[in-house]
Image (cartoon, rainbow, N blue to C red):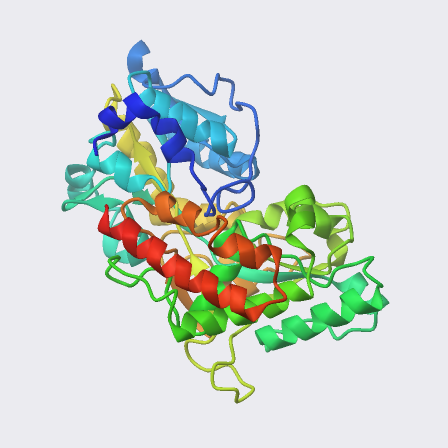
Length: 456
């Protein structure tokens, strides 16, 4: 279905459905972000700052935590090119509403972030600038140097429409003060999900319910339950993007462990009302899992000295008490730097994108603590970007664990939203005491995903 046709029936609603991580929706890989335009411009402006002779390019992003670093890198490019860069920070939901409005006949920003939930729709409808000819002439860009999953995500029908901006990983965040208060052993890199469950239960019980041992925002799948499924050998979407094993025994084993963790954690009603991040920062929760895109929020928090990171736990599939290959799984996603196909200055847009994505720009991004790079092997400096806080678990999981790319199909949001509704996982989220409900939810999700893929 073409985007120009979808616009007639409400494309904004389609594109905004269940944007979770890298992931989206609030604190997912969307990074939360600012709610107002920054960089001296109106967030709805765009398309072609080059209309005034090519001396301004508009850029839209959605994460205010990344603004300062990205602006610094952009300013370096401006000094060389003589073209100003106006960066607008737009909150996650409005970001896609504004972009869709531009795609449906208005003005799109010149350069902007693309996400796995929406990339196929924009690429297939010729709304993004094709980068093939530029890449072929650019000695600074070799696509083989980037994470393969991100490169493939932003390609369609043999053409490349965005360059990998970054990648992210997941780690376990805990409050050392709470663990000390209740005399519970603190997390280590050797923890399994069983260890996580047991520690969460001890804190919840010892506090008399005043503090929850763990909180999981089930709507943010990338930094929560997806990782349980993959740690136990299941797949939300198969590697060919044509099927799922979410109803299989491996996935059910992972979701059974997730159920056991949820049973001793903050109820989803509490999470929905307050949010995992707020619960953690207010001292009401001892542990959460979070993505690397959220480090800054906790690094700058009032009680950040109490906050520590450990590697994401592993799923002990064979019960041998140690982490074997394929048992510590961290979901990764990656944003792409894209340009509008209608920009009046495509050469300058690509030049800026290349500056963000070449080796120097990617290293600068990591050094400034913006995010880890989309280029492989250049993110070690990210570990030392946050003085006084050890964030190395995000980087070490790449060699001491296994990364898998965030599951997607052509219309990810269709099934991603549906499997979290009543009749599927919502029932299990709301009643985590019954294993049968969780198993049934996996079966329901299997059919939902299969039907959605068949209709793509």
